[in-house]
Length: 473
Image (cartoon, rainbow, N blue to C red):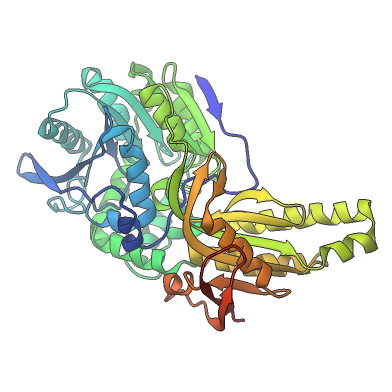
């Protein structure tokens, strides 16, 4: 087993910046939503899509719940597909009995799931492809690669497992009783505000009402509660441990260290058991497609193509958050260099702790301030508010400015007029105040955030006038 991995970071590892709304994603001139087609597996129609323009072929075996139609409505997922499609032509589908595929009673068997993969590959005319299995798509990918090596170019297993629940000789997973208890809770809350899954698969999205409503709709349109229970019961019985040594294709195992659904030890077991597999560990969440593109996509592109190709400037929609310490010069003079540096270190640590909880990405520190980016305006505003409270606890007052606009990514840095606007907005904020540009309130409607109109302002170096708003409460 070869081991790769990213360094642990204080902030979330997300590197692609996305807005929540589909309308914004589409007006950016992104990848068009592909047509949904059907491949027949016996008497069942399997809904599939093909997207992207890369020369390499990838078949994605997704986790439950899915609906190939609905996923495109969540902009971070749209960005995820765009990034994949930049270096590969990808096919994905709803498993038999789920999403837009024909519904069946109960759960499809492992053999039926294998047939679904074959018929989709045949329908698109692919003899060979890279098989990419997420979550419970991973064991299926392992079986397919071992059974059909002539059709499997490479195998990628992301946040997956050989066996989900604990068994003699396999002490990694949860006890079956704990698993069954969670399944009952998930079924009881399926498609409702009580669904427990968001806290596990995408904890950074907690508090984002738009995301929660979308997940509820995704659940309802992917299967019924009873069909979910049947799928989860089948997943608990799947065990491909004996298959792993028979896999003879290049394999990359990708796993999040903080995965709350499938512990990272599952990924380590897979990588140790598959001949010459490479393990890539990273800091992140269970399903990256829910939060946009993260650092794993670079590792996957390199594995599939042999290299990572990024444009010199990558323009994306993002929310920028600027903070800085109020009256920092006076505080530094009063405290002296050593004490001031110690206080700033505590300031940075406090901001980074809050940033990590809200899924932001630290871009730069400016001595007594920080620039960070978010794929969600609502999370950026909440993060700013919590940063103000966190720094008050250590005896500092900060101000914050938030703006949503198009930025240019240059490696780990961001540039463009949106960054300048964010900085100017922050400069106008008062002590302990979160000030936002007029682009932000329309994007967080329904989030519970309330703003006071601060009127029109000129921003130094920025054309025109800008209406600003202050966060209430």
